Length: 400
Image 1 (cartoon, rainbow, N blue to C red):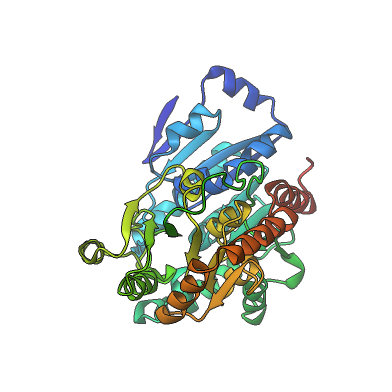
Image 2: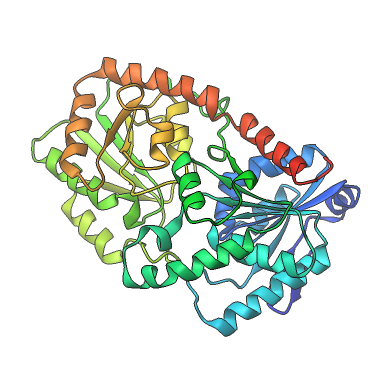
């Protein structure tokens, strides 16, 4: 099923699936800034809600995952949304299209992910009378992290927009770590009683299980993330270069796709330089991250700030030790000296030092891995996260 409404692409399942949706008790729209994000991080929650009798509709900028949603029985609505656009005419048109979708779909609740979608989705919902709104900010994003002139100029505007978007008696905000919670409180963006702390999107600990591969092979270090400077990728490359000069028996892997919609995206020239240096093997996008993690001994993330990084949770679930920066988000999953190491931001020498410690101590790797798995099972299991989210929907007034 494919309908084109003033630039909006609305995709749906076949007639049989549509009949099931018609019988659903409640309709929920998930709105995110990429369909990739919805598919990789929120599909499990959507399936959980569908099992509860809900009709979950996916909405995002046009991407490559619409057909996958349809194959699984979900409807997907593609928007002509440019994440980097600041054109007021274009953005006003996007808001009109979102309002049109809301009027047509008449959802009982909307769940927005990432800052731009939180702002646009909530403002549009307010104008058409949708009062049950859940907003999830999974990390503060480029505008709050970057020190660039453009980011500093936009920050006050975004703060005011967030303050307006988050208001409402049945509007709630999900944050992933206590540091973000304190920041939102300090900026007075929302009443503290309307904030819930839910640590990440959850992982399936029956799917991400310890590897049975031989750990005595060449020691392999992985950084898996979007190719953004704020993920500390240059720090990773510099650490790999430092260790490679010592002729250690070690391999460094960088997995992830470029994100041209983000101002912090790594350039093609930077990637070409790293390939030429030869210290890091650049894999690009990896479809099956679990299979890749079966073959690695250590996962690192020298990021500048996170919500709670899903890749580190998945690695810990597989009993892989971790190294990350001592920043909000990373501290939620990496416990220094227990399941990994925490290092300062932008410190390639510290990263190289901690990698070397684990390279030379396989027993410590095993100890860290076992502790990480235990932590994930207790705090980050996806069923736990799904239930917390469902409880919040009920608090907002959704009768599920």
